[in-house]
Length: 204
Image 1 (cartoon, one colour):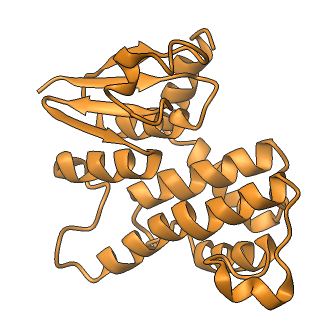
Image 2 (cartoon, rainbow, N blue to C red; image 1 turned 60 degrees about the vertical axis):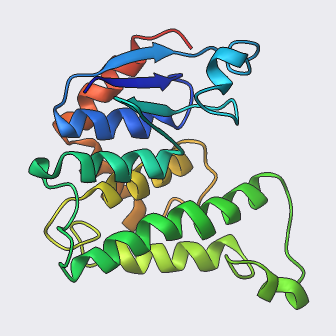
């Protein structure tokens, strides 16, 4: 089945590109421009939100970066980007994917927009009272290392490491040494380097 990757290099779709490169599978890239093209009927038929990335695998369409990365890991089990079903490590694998897509994403966006949660309303937010609380949890998760699941690199590292990498680049998170060393280790992977070269050569 053909893999088609809908992306814009000036976006977090770069994380999905990295995951595709980790699978080693051939795929076709469709660059979607910001503005009218991304909101066009042709593209919103693929992703109704009019955002990138999106992935088509035969008749299957997947949107949302974390979902695409998770889907690829399951679609190509031979590359071992996820613990197999039934493996106890599957719990931590899902935990950190969803923690980063949920509490981390929300806390980081709120901070970037200048919003703060009144202490008396912290219980209403899945990320608690502050971004620092979320970062403390992620720092503790990656500190034993070298990867989230110990010695095994997984798709969870692509998403968590990709998000932390963007956070460090755009100074939206604290440059904690644990984050810097974890991201540097991940960005040394051949698949990340290939993905970065491919996206760097594309028009935004």
